[in-house]
Length: 545
Image (cartoon, rainbow, N blue to C red):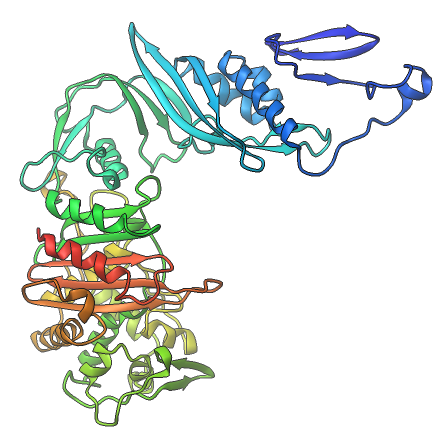
């Protein structure tokens, strides 16, 4: 038998007692606990319960697990889960590797089969101690073969940020801490700017050893994916932090943090078009996946900035020239329509179609382009999409795959297989403003002399001027006017509503500029671009930076 479990013989049957800590977890083999113990009873197949566990079973199963875990009995606690093999090493590392003791677990009222709880404990290492507290939850399920109520095992049961294959550890940190500062020297912390948590962890991982600091003693989560940084949970003894200069602006970052909190799921990025310096990055929720820099989803009509650039470069349209905008259009068997099936009068200009976000004006020009791969080439060659950006942290640099037929047409209006995030769209807006792609960076190139991505060519001054004219119109009287009304300076915008299969309400996208600052935002299921993402961008642009 493994450590922490005992076998006793009671009334002729084997009883497994977990840990001997008195929480009453027993596994009775060969009997259903009733009858006279005769031959018929001993040979009968035990009745296996089915259906969801009862409230009493949920309370008993969770209490037994909590008691064993708190007592440091990893084997006993693992027996009360539906994955003993996976649970035991993680539970054992809690005390052995993370040095977490004096554990007190307080469950809250169960919500269905879920039991929320708080953990208060003490981390002790090398003569130093510090309290650790957090909240998590577990789910109680019925065992498939035994029918018993068991804890549904997942690493998050032990800590909400613990993922599969990751481990909890306490000791001398593998990388010295850093003090990240904004462009003006203001200190950036994850406590003050929660969205920067993943970014600061990555900066420490990449630049901590070269920043001149010394290691401290910490409790951290060591991730299974080497590309992802470790997650610091607690500092028992501070080392000497090394200073890392970023391109961020504390004022713009604070505005970005405020803006995204108004929505359940939102992301925004702001950058300086003339240099590519990232001024702000924010997500709500702020922990975990950094959607602003790593997300991949269709950006809707905000991509018309790029499509318009391609059409202007090919001489198929001009900002002031006429462009047909019917309420719907067909291309190779695929039908496209405008929002609420609107149309524009004959003789309306391409700027009017752009500012009103007319889909059909773009679709009607596909025949004249005569190249299904034209948009993919424009994305790569002019806007730097897909060129392996080296921002200084983990980021995704967008994708416009080469497509044919109806799928290629969908790309013209930012649908189909186009994949972008807020960083990519802010960069596209920046390139449209200046005519030349500047790869976004969050730490200066001089920090590590890394090779930045370079697009193969720039837009002509004429095309750049026309793009800015159309974006200014969108902000002045088009679909972005309401959101941009409070933004000053030389300003422009583009809205987008990205339809997603199986999602009743579209994602809200918005991108805009004010003087030498560009920003883009996405709000999941936010509807029209000007309604949700627009105010997020406007708040960041007003903060400047």
